[in-house]
Amino acid sequence: MSGHPEVLTIIAAVTADAAGRLVLSGRLDSAGVALVWTPALALAAGSRGELGVDCSAVTYLDGAGASLLVRLRQLCVETGRECALAGLAQDQAALLALYTAGLESLAAETSRPHISYLEQVGRFGVRMWRDVSDLVGFLGESSVALGRAMASPGLVRWKDVWSTCETAGVNAMPIIGLIGFLMGLIMAFQSAIPLKRFGADIFIPDMLGISMLRELGPLVTAILLAGRSGAAFAAEIGTMKVNEEVSALTTMGLDPLRFLAVPRVLAALFVTPILTIFFNLFAFIGGAFVVSSLGYTLTTYLTRLQASVTVGDIATGLIKAMVFSLLVAGIGCRSGLTTGTGASAVGASTTASVVAGLILIAVADGLFAVLFYAMGI
Image 1: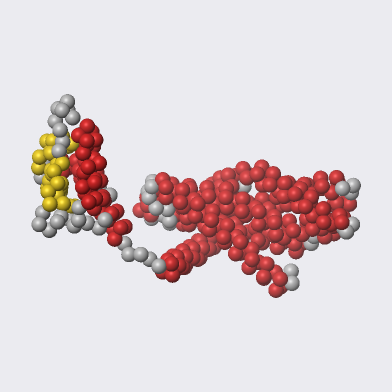
Image 2: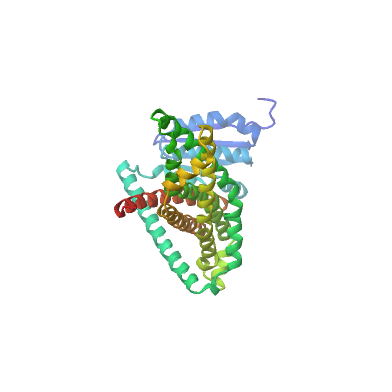
């Protein structure tokens, strides 16, 4: 070490109360800190009570030296002790302040009392209840705004409605058709195996028609709508919220709910039943391929399909699709309007819109099942 231009020394002195005291001197740059880092932390860890650090003999301090002081303070925070720095010059103290901005939050987290599992469950339940209450309130406000828009069509921005119909409806038809075709193909193949054992594979069109029209058609279409259009609504409005465009609308006296949410909800309400019909059509086409491969003619397939389904089956599926569209579009707009600040907030609101939309679709579908069973439909 004799070749080093200025050797950094650490002197440990024991006071009357057995508290250790570190004395730093010389240049606290990368070379000097490399020499004293390990012994400094060892002395600090071995001391008891408040850790005193005397920096009056420090002639130079850069980022490396500041990192050493920050680590000493952090070590004290982790062990529940105080760290007293003394003798720093004004410029050195200002540099150190840049590195210690997050220590207060670390100390707060360290001193935070332990929360029991029961209390965590209770807090989660309270958060869920608040979220559900806010969601129900937003859906109510959206229903009122939608009713006013239907009563006064001149207040609706129809240009935005048709534009959203194109992006959420027309542009979604390829993926809807593909998933519908594959669903019909897969369900027909899966049902053909057990039905063929009993010589009942002729009833594949019956099963496919009822299951698609009443349940899977509107359900899968709504799920695709939630993952595609609902997330897009949340991202678009959330970005506007982050850019303070929503605040600008409020400042100008415009209702963001009527200006942003209503056109998207109306568009979803228009296109979702059409997408459901489109999905069912391609599902039936996929089922026709399977039935034809089993030796039945297309005429037989269409005849069985027509005989098994009723207008009530079609109506119940379309009613479900309309309700699902209101839920998905409303949740997407609500998540966008409640977005926080920052790019991560937009991602969080988009994720929340998809998750909440899927949950509400499942809940609503269960309620429809109970209601239709009670009504004998």
